[in-house]
Amino acid sequence: MNQHSSVANNSTTFQGVTVRVCELRLERRTKAAAGTERAEYICGASGGPEHGHILGVAGEDLSSMVAICNACPIPDALEARQSCLNLVPVRRFSGGKRSLPMAQAGAQGERSSEAAEAYFPCRWFYSLFGQQQPRDNTMCLGCPYWFPRPPRELIPHYWPETQKMLRIVNGEESTLGPPTGLYSPAPQRPPSKPLWQRLREKIHV
Image 1: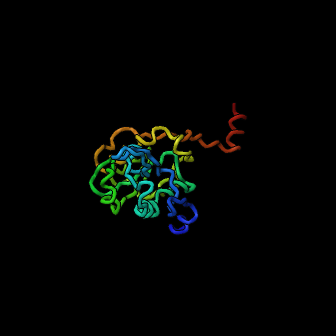
Image 2 (image 1 turned 90 degrees about the vertical axis):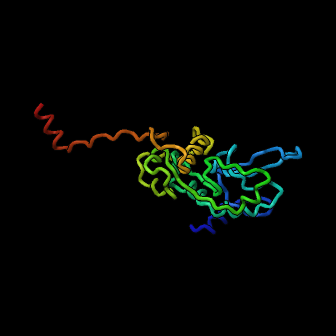
Image 3 (image 1 turned 135 degrees about the vertical axis):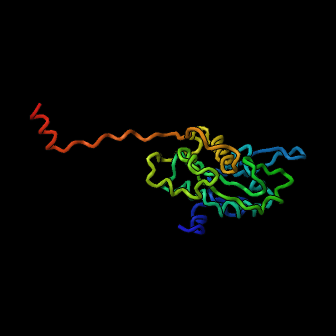
């Protein structure tokens, strides 16, 4: 499925504009300088609900959010059949190597045209790649640690892990240490002996 058909088939509407559905796009309520409440749309893949990049603000121009979200490969990866429990996709926006990018209210227009790079770290194998984490989820194919991905809300420590992977991509945290994978494959049973060998062993007992 190409990007255009994917957007058309898996989209939602904000203020009359079509945006790709994404489980990592969040809505955050904050207080504006005048004391009024406003709703901000946050890219959770860039730092979680508290530190993620502000994609847009309800009631304002959302063209930047549309462009950023509709070009992002993460929604398709999360909806793919091989999407895994241990996959922690992150998106790093330009404008400096900050593991927890946070757009300020007055800087949204300044940051709206910035490029964003997507990475697909795995909790089991991120230490193999350092800053050069995979740019897609093809490594999930045939992985012995693969486990079907549940809803994000059920995945333990998801946002801290997102922030950790961002720090790794930015070179701010070492990949030394044990993996943080959530599921280990069952031990493989030794192959059974051929029938003739089992019969011979019983005869000679």
